Image: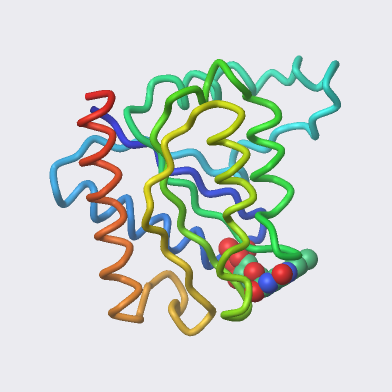
Length: 175
Ligand SMILES: Cc1cc2nc3c(=O)[nH]c(=O)nc-3n(C[C@H](O)[C@H](O)[C@H](O)COP(=O)(O)O)c2cc1C
């Protein structure tokens, strides 16, 4: 059992990455093996449906996804959707990686109004790849983090709950 936590924000001051780190800490504190993929450390070419699939970073990224028992994706909300880098990751990795995986989401947003924005990606994963989406997600605005820390107690608790829910569901389905 290994849970892959993916941070998709390309912003060096990313808040979703801080929450992703909190999830890793929660999982490790519970004795769960974790893996980490940060698209700032491992940038991928933009998908063009052709030559971009030759990106030398791609095989390693695909293997990380395939090896995972469950996945937590930390995403920024941009224009009422996830950011382009998160969508690009799905486009670059595709069916072989995501089919019947278990995925939970942590979202960083600028305001409360975009709270359903992650559903477009969730729907796409469910319909295209039969991905199991954990029906609990974390959605937080900038007040939730300060520097490298999650300071909002409620958000912190929700990250823990989500992390443990991904472990529970992925163990039951794929364990
Ligand atoms: C191009 C762009 C579009 C954005 N669109 C939205 C949006 O539709 N809804 C929202 O609540 N916040 C929006 N935001 C604010 C981001 O979600 C917010 O800055 C969040 O912290 C980004 O995540 P990150 O810190 O992990 O990069 C947008 C920010 C940018 C740069």
